[in-house]
Image 1 (cartoon, rainbow, N blue to C red):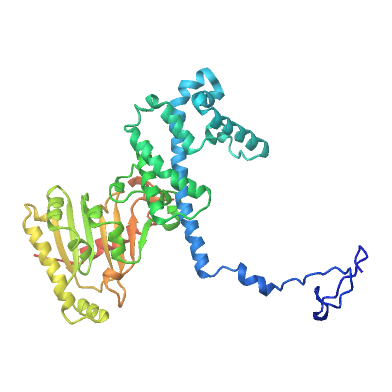
Image 2 (image 1 turned 180 degrees about the horizontal axis):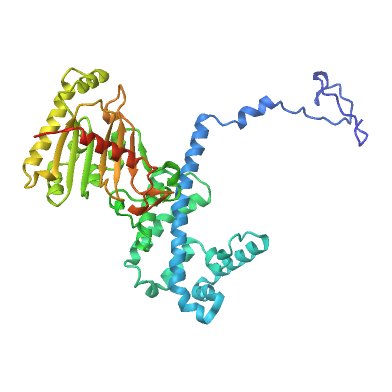
Length: 415
């Protein structure tokens, strides 16, 4: 008997809510669904998990760039406009700078600040100001309204506005937790890097002319020692990091490997010649094409006898022709080694804090083109790029540099 005096039907199969046996006036109760009936609808399969993880990774990367840009733009606006308005308006200088045209959004920022104060959302006293509650479009509006004040510090207003236009799509997608395509993410990263450079916050690391310091690398790079990129094979490496970007502005190139195809076949001999003639130094260390080690490597790869040795010999002959055209052959050295090859490494400016290295391990049945690739940046310590007198010897770069020097000392010159 229910609390209202109505009879509740039993839950067995013979007395369902629509059964003819139920007395008049009885209340029908639907039987709860079993957990098994709900489970499949709530579960995410492998593809669904992959999709949401991809979304989260892209959104997280975009957020870092947007955060850096917003902080930088906020600092620039404060540095330029505060001295103009604060002497007269005090703490209300942002409201005064917004003027009648920005009265609505600046008052909204003031209200949000007050709510954040009351609810304890202001965790850092440095954020207890109206400027910290302005969004990227509002900061842009302040800059546009007062462009004559910013003109002495920023070369091109159009560059700033175009970059901010490109970022607006990403900002809306990230703020609403929607899917961000890889193309839009790449566009946002390029726009952010360009905008930070225009606003005077570009990287001051010499190696950035070859491999720019990525925002994510700058924040969490200490988790991965001095490894700044990993590619599943050399094709993907060259797609993201062409040989011209790697070797084009080098002052020193030290390379160790079997045939050094990454350099010999992807960077012209004319460019190598120009590098050496302009004061650079090149040291190339090949596996001896007549050694027993190269025969073992041929057997590992399952290729015809002599095929690999002929390819290495052709590369050496090509480099000898380049060297023969130099007035100072000492700037372009070629040597061979006879030991079992363990890895290939290209050290660009490896003697300084701005060095970049591309390293691949030799796998038993995998050609060099198909082997995984590590890209290392010299001079990384605690996630920050540092000066040469502060180098962290715990990274991988010094290990490969030392191994190259040992191999070079034990090798023989090619006449």
